[in-house]
Image (cartoon, rainbow, N blue to C red; front, side, top):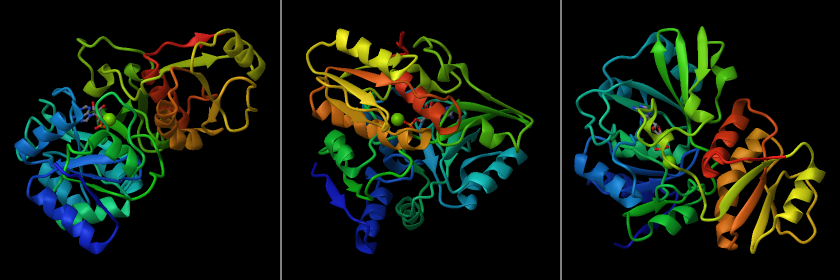
Length: 339
Ligand code: AMP
Ligand code: MG
């Protein structure tokens, strides 16, 4: 299959929408990361997403919509709290879990009776959904296990020859996937996966807000997870990622200098100085910038042939920093070097 690279023009967007309507797979930019889309109602097309990614069949897909009338078509119940959050955060980087309607097949929901739904804010994503008229099932457009793609070239690196087209919208603004939440009861927000939005952002709307333990710790592959995606090793480049929890920069440097192997790299904060004798990349000083850069740097490290990467631990665990901490820990298989 020849994968077309499409641009942000009315003709190319129409081509992408037509491909989706005819059951093909099209990758597209969102404000979080690139998604690999198919009509969420078509079993065969959704199966093709799982094949193209090499994704386990029990890991459900998020369905993307462009307006609230589409939500009514694909879910059977919308809690009041979800309506309030939709008003506050949609379009945007928030995915909410609802009981699914019959038009969403079990392949899309990974066998669950619920479906995750998001209304993205990226103008190209919105246009694509509107033009196609389809609710679009779209996981991140990487091969399963690899870092999520934040540019069209990353998508091509993983998916060239496997899918019909990629819409190029430049680099994604946020850089990590959406926040995924479900509702344990009418007043409780349960965060399954942190993203740009976290506990602090939902507190004004809900009596209780809490983060699933799978965000902080590795859960067994055979365990029953509230969010099946959290069971799998994820987001990791080929290089081994080792976060180093050091009291200060000097102790980080001392550790690195005495524990180098062939092709050792460091991933530092922007404000950290270079380390003589060890090649370094930088990934921002605060949660927002780190989220934006993290997956991009992971892919860059692989391109440079890194074998081992010592990473400075994010300083905080709030808001976007929690998503950075979570992706970093999962890329590292939850192994940390604590000094
Ligand atoms: P990705 O498509 O790669 O962004 O991953 C989607 C994430 O959303 C995974 O971690 C899934 O486990 C989670 N997810 C999607 N749908 C559901 C659902 N119905 N229930 C719980 N988690 C879900
Ligand atoms: Mg993914």
